[in-house]
Length: 459
Image (cartoon, rainbow, N blue to C red; front, side, top):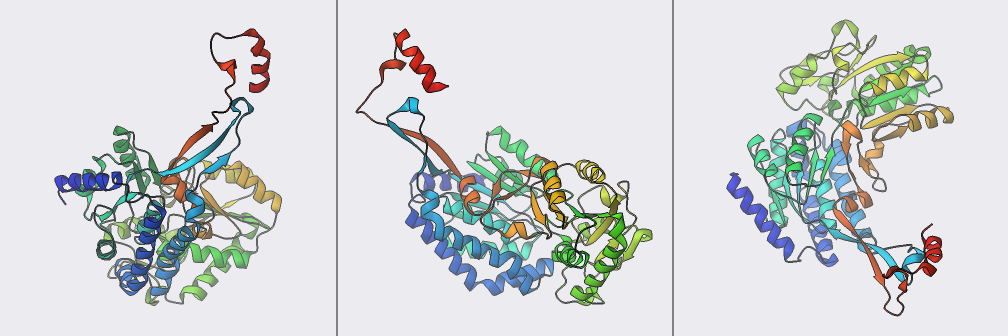
């Protein structure tokens, strides 16, 4: 799409929003209904596209993408009336007699830029929140997931007029042209590097921006952990989507006293979950493209591989790989892995954990496996991270009752459920003052006799 076409599209959406057509709750519910039915009707096509782009099985595609989107739509339909109504708050005595409330209002024209690793979920999930809040949206899926982008374009074009929801496909040229436009909110999911570029562009228009980024998310295994269960859950979360998950455990910090047991349990779980030959498992996916495949191979130190390490250039697959004896100086610790490589480091005292985690910035997720409540409380209070789990991994992402987002280098802003509705809304602070009484103390000429009363009200 040419820059001129994009500017015309943005103008059409701005006019549509100004018409007020997106504001009534009935219109929002109708839009969500249409989207829900279209996704159900095209589930097979979506699943095939996810398999073509990432090798995802239908089961995994539904569990981690399609089903989560349907769940978000169901939540919004059920709770829309509650989320959109004025929210009463307390009024200070000095403003008596009046009532105070916050009024959720749509922001307007939004841009949603999504990544390739969960190309359906991370496109349509935020779109659901945008529509529920009463906005228009331009959706820009990743060029690295062409099959899913094509299905998204057909699905959304079949449900919405382009002045309401439009899909812009393409690569860097289209991204650049979109970021030159003025929107009322930009929602971006992707890498920290590209996130900085997005923020640089949106700053020119003072456009509020939500950034869902990533980072090196640690998984801490302390000496009290249930090792067998920890291994089972870590293997699930790490090798889901071939490790191409923003909240996957990036590396393990394991207490030295249980490291040998943990490594043995991880090897056992890889075989149990993915088979003796994972590259032959039809439910084990692939790396998105050759560029990322080669990058991942460059992170593997074969001398430190204790499980896996084999790969197939023809299918762009890397077997689940575990590395032991890793230090902060290894290449695999120099960047977010975003692939099926699990480095294992050790610690003796919690201060070592804090030093290791804080040296890598503020991660998007953090996981702790422990039976010691005090340890869990101390770690979660001490370290700064987006969100996480105690004795599990990844699943906090799938909870509509909590917002999901990063902090610092791992992102800004959050979404899902009520938090998503609020992120795509502006909460107008309102005071409705009674006309029956008008206290004179605030008006000039100021009178000393009111000063004591004023101090009492405002202290």
